[in-house]
Length: 97
Image (cartoon, rainbow, N blue to C red; front, side, top):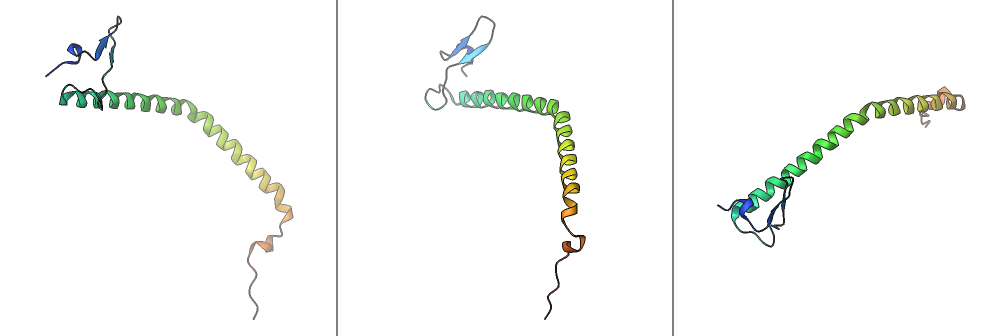
């Protein structure tokens, strides 16, 4: 099995980070290359999901405050508009035959 470090499409940078120039749709050397490529992409997906969760966790307290504020504003608007509606109008009129 060919290791990525020996492949012509793998580039190792000075800091030890690897960059892959391979494209699984164009230049695959072995079948295991596709599995490795899938693992790399899956790892990237998981990392971005974790960052999104971290950001949402930071935003949660602010969102809760905004929801509470909006709920109070809506309730205040409902309270100020209540005088316009007769309490008996809430029920539907009965049909008289």
